[in-house]
Image 1: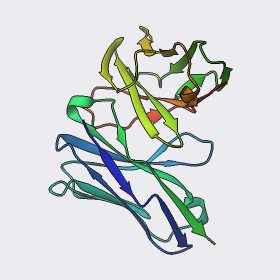
Image 2: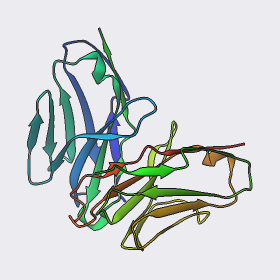
Image 3: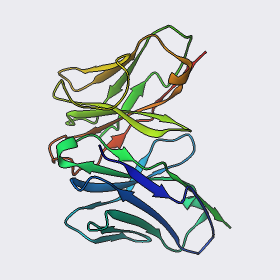
Length: 113
Length: 115
């Protein structure tokens, strides 16, 4: 089955700096890669996603890149703010496993004011 | 549209008991997935239902089961509870029609504590 590895497990940055979180996946059939943000005590919320036919997607301060050949994708957050502090999860889904997201173990991002 | 809802939000049970959790998806969504979230294991997929049929299953023992009703609401049941079943149980809904390439929307979760 699919396996997703996520690094780093914790990340601390100064406000205004950039943050990068990386994930690798094992199943070449995976074709959809969402990123979720989970604040303490709250549900995971989608912040950005990318499909396998796209190499990069950007939404204001957040961007995601996908390298299908290397089977890795990354989340980039620029100009970080204290409210970006949360746990971030990457996930992978394949067309034959609709509804079954395989998640990375999460990255706890702390943005220091 | 109303979001995904889950009931109850909190549960305390003792070992050996059974529990049933409920999830109501976003209106029009026919796929409901269940996940177990623990500090040590992260988010683990339990199973997914689409149009009342289990379409995908994770690697959990048979004590974990589920079903889906004709209105797409889903229930998850855990029998013979063990201490290790203490976790946040999240459900997520989607239309289920995009071949996997679509967003799953999560409910607030049910926090289960087994004593």
